[in-house]
Length: 89
Image 1 (cartoon, rainbow, N blue to C red):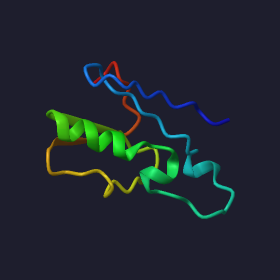
Image 2 (cartoon, rainbow, N blue to C red):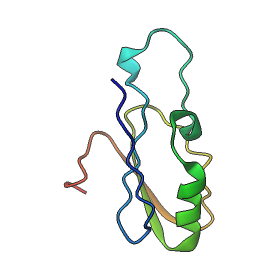
Image 3 (cartoon, helix red, strand yellow):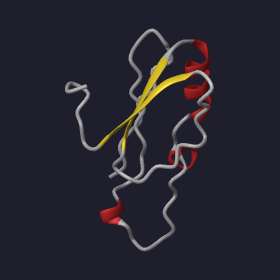
Image 4 (tube, one colour):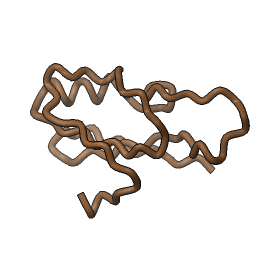
């Protein structure tokens, strides 16, 4: 079952953007899309936020995501997690 993505549009709040891609373990043998934009992530919005204020992007590597679409000019930090909860961060 695909998870719904929650994308708040107010940049004063913490952002929680969730992909709808499944786990690699549930693969059917079809080609795997690892670009964020191919997994319903609004990359333009992420780039808008990172260009407007200091930003830390935290990515849960549930899959081997390719993050080259994220503009890193103004990005302060990228933190890779592996199943870490938001509360733990």
